[in-house]
Length: 299
Image 1 (cartoon, rainbow, N blue to C red):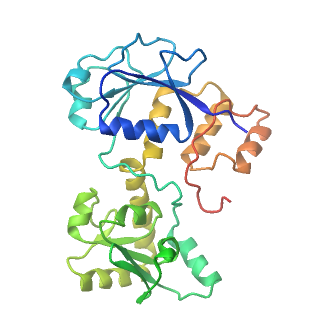
Image 2: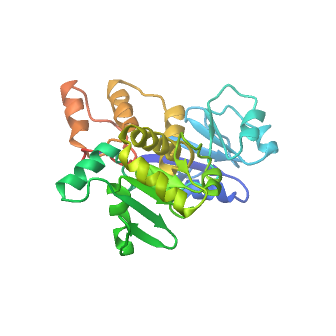
């Protein structure tokens, strides 16, 4: 089993809420230690108004909370901020990573494209096309109200999903071809026709979803683009992965192979990791990978 990553923390003063959420998320899959008192090595460190000298041999990810922070960077390896204007102000050639304003987990949500959804329905004797409705007011499968415990089932196997503001990110995370209202699409930065479809009222949304359920090509395009929007703007797991990619460079073939498998969403314990290392006669990766949502076919 891979050793857990060790992430150092060097923070001075009150922490912004966004930074607290990030630290908590990092701590789910790594050992977070105080740089001021940790005697052992760390893989990378998160810095915010550091009260101690930042060692030059450890990759440093600087969190920028305001314009003053942006003007006081000291040899960052990566710059992270919740606002693009703060990243633009940072006078550095280091990689800059924008942190979305409303990060969520949904790590259990695996992206299911339309074709696997179709296979799931056929294997279980379900209708050829099904529209699901997921929202704060309840759960609907093929026009019938169902128990909330079937929420994930609807999001995984419906041909198309109508989602409101409370469910749209989850729907995109599962790769569901999604229909929503204009306000919800605007709230999550989704482009109509690119990431999802929008309808101004319930009747229009249901008509669009019914048509989408029959249009496999459009459904597949929206499924992929919607999942990518979730990963790039809302997934805290994928944010941490982008930060680590920029901060910690692969040190050899094993790390480079592991990085490719991580990008594909391969689970940390997936057999393919061991087979890839064995095929190349490589040692196992030294540090652990994030436990990312698996792709279709991985168990």
